[in-house]
Every structure is written in C-alpha cells, then in structure tokens.
Image (cartoon, rainbow over all chains, first blue to last red; front, side):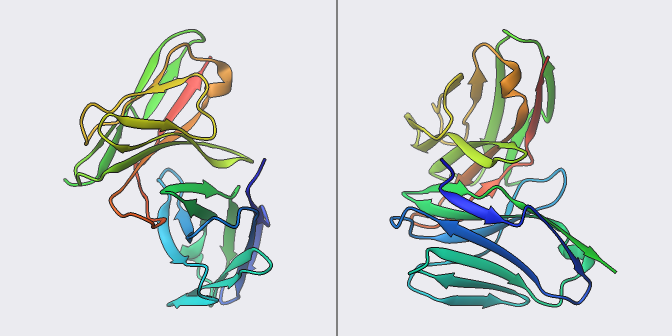
Length: 110
Length: 113
C-alpha cells in the first residue's frame, strides 16, 4: 500500500507563479518529512525538510507547510523559475528509512 | 572526488542472467540504501544497511541480494534477472541518525530483455 500519497502527478506553472505540491501520510510514527528534487539523469537531492513538531519551514523561495492532525504536508515554491523545472518527491522517515511519494513533474513555462 | 558512485550507469541483460550493481561511497557513512525508481511508483526501498555486515529488507526485496563487507561498498545483485526488474536503481547513503537526509548516486539504468 502507498504510505505516502502525492499529488498532482504533473504540474505546469507560469514563471513567477506559485507551485504547490501536496502529500498525505498514514503512519503517525514517521518523524521527519523531507522533500527531494530530481533533475533528469540525476539522483534525487534533498531540498528542504521539516519535523512534525513544526507547522511551517521556509528556506528562500521554498516553504513546507505541515498539518499534523490532518497528516498532510505540502511544498510551496514562490516566484517559480524555469530552473525549478524538475521532479519533486515528498518523503517520510522512520528509523533511518525513507518512504517516498510517487513524484510530481513540475514544468515552469515562460 | 568524494561522493557516492554507482556502476555501471547503463546495463542491458537478458532474463535469467545474474547482474551486480556496484555502489561506493567515500564519506564513511554508516547507512546505505538501494532504491528502485519506476514511473507511477516513485522510489521504493529494496534493501538497506546500518553498518558493515548489517543488512535488512525494504519494501521490495524479492529477487535481490545485498552484501556489505566494507563500510564504503554496498553491491546489489539480481540473482536471476526478470523483465519486471527493468528499472533505474539508486544507491544512497546517510551519516546522520534520525534525519531524512540521504545522498544519492546518479543511478544505474537496467534493462532486462
């Protein structure tokens, strides 16, 4: 079963707009929620992460919003740029193991 | 250069053959992982290792074997490759406890004919 559900599968946003990707999890034992960014032909790389005792974390144009009671978290990319075009994965961690969502292919158009 | 390297980057094999994917990291990280990436499934954990000589199954271990005799190496073997094992395989490592920060290699694309 998919323990971390991610949506949408693909997303097209205009340059300068806000990109929003959503994830939901089932296992309340997860204790760390990272987002990874992957460019074609490369491995995923950590973008930003949050712990469940924090409701929001911001790093530059990237923000994670976390709703513990709803078991949901989301990634917001402000002022989206063509260089942000990539596949984004949410994940949830327990005991050093990451469970990933299915990924969102983000395309930023001029 | 320091980092995590995978080899081969591309491999084509036939059903029933044995294939070994290599992974080497230079950070002396304790934790190492093998994931496979498939469209519609994201990344799924095959096996992981907390230290040399300690390995454990992940979500999709069937058909795969791992070993970790040295901290820096974590090879993944497909003992008898099947078409369903056509995928992109990623090795990752982590030196930090209780975090979700994994460092990934660039992947090995395997095609089983």
